Length: 312
Picture 1 (cartoon, rainbow, N blue to C red):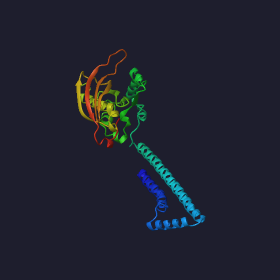
Picture 2: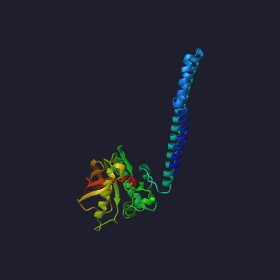
Picture 3: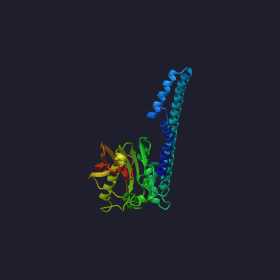
Picture 4: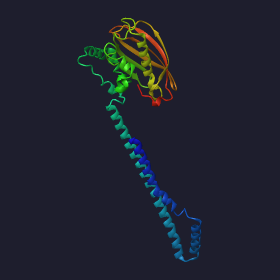
């Protein structure tokens, strides 16, 4: 609201700054009525039949016209400059107001956080030894260390980019998070332009279908979110919804393990993006990753995407 009020005031002041120029144009020598034109013609003919004094009068008239033109041109320049400065002032105030509003929303837990801010928003509780151990294991893993050395990748913790009130209603950010489920928010590394994504997460023993095995629906949810997040940067407004998701389960996924999700955007056509990906184990030294599930998906950016919150 502050920004719109500043904008209206700026337009009103800019309009007023042009009025003197308009009045000068209306009274300039070129804008004479027919009667005034006839009178000037009569005076000009009298000047032609008079002595040198008449010639001086005619020249004096030309000098006055030129002076008036210069004055009118200067007025137009001042009006344009004043209008431009007022518009610039309004834009500056509007930007400052928008930034202040964004910071106020963020301080109340209503604004989305940046990638960098999301990395600082989770600290395991001192009493939660399991969460601290899991986070330390992820941070120390050679694959994670290597990912952090790649300048083309941006690191974040996607669920921690959400404001608190929004995350509280999120399936993966809240309902499936916590001890025994996903005790530590997932890490993600995304490549610019929605090209690829790598994510690392620990899945506990309270998300099982068969005893000791991660529920296939949870793996489907991981693939749905991970593949979508991969292609967001390639879609209008960084938003896409699932149009199709095909999953092949390769092997049973043990609960209480670290999982890696890898995704790659294979094709983009306007508001559509095709992505492929897989879930595999986080390998130990000298081990080959075990592929648990593979998927392909189609995501579409809806026409009303500009009104949806950005989850990437």
